[in-house]
Length: 385
Ligand code: SF4
Image (cartoon, rainbow, N blue to C red):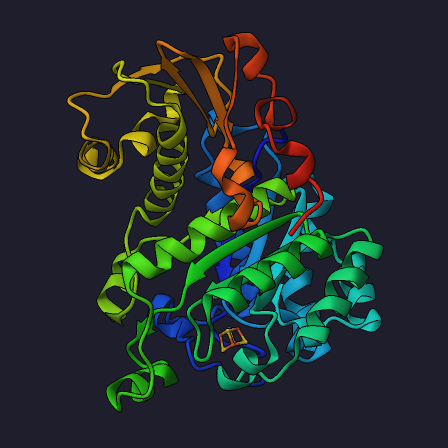
């Protein structure tokens, strides 16, 4: 697996934004807008602080917080020019930036290519036109389709940002957005639920009772159903939930924020897998689950919540858990006196109606060869849904 780049973020809050999207208040997260000359000093200082043991990783400057390519071309170039000396000296490897899907035409891409930009993160937010309209995004889903395909054709690394629970959004809309993104095949995705932030236009709607964010449970439920689709589609998930920060927490008014949101989603996925497996395989013997060591806390759930719920649901006195480096990350093995069963989380991406027999029995080594071997319904899953 490629090592993640070391990113030096430069925040340009709301620069280039053609619309003030209802959910957004970048100034809640970052106040100052650095001028192009100050960017050069900022990069210099950041490079001096680079940890020596992380030398060798790809180093990227990232322009975040606004719609970089929606700024006038002169301003874009004035920022990118400040990175040029570091690129020429080999101190920075490339540039990434985030922007809107309707500001990525061929002329823009020519400028980006000429200035060392390798990665473009596209603010997709939703693939439902109604949701985009109600969120005052000012673009349509077809803009995202053409922007992502164009970026891929031009050889950029492409990331997409998706949100759940925007005005008008439903779980079905959200899952359809994920399906469409899987078809577009970006390199990676970041997803987070919509929050109500102080100063964002959504605050007014929320105060007037015209918008309700998702509850934390709903947000986890939507993501729990969407993430396996992305994993099955082999789209790299760069982040689930917003990066926790003091500023974000100080501006949060309402919504499903949790500093360990990703882990809540992972735990919910493991709960589903464990529940499916126990439903069909309990034989009176005490069940033993085996997972990859780093999956242990997700399998247990926060404060052992998964284990407690499973014990209660199936009337079990005890559920044992073992870890084994040889278990595939994200998979789950169940041992009972009747046999050993395996399930891969990507199988959860199949249609609900076919979810009831996703386990397969066999020997430990047979079961642990990846989803195509571990999942009884692999053939069916791979036809998509
Ligand atoms: S979401 Fe993007 S385009 Fe919309 S206001 Fe925020 S930074 Fe600007």
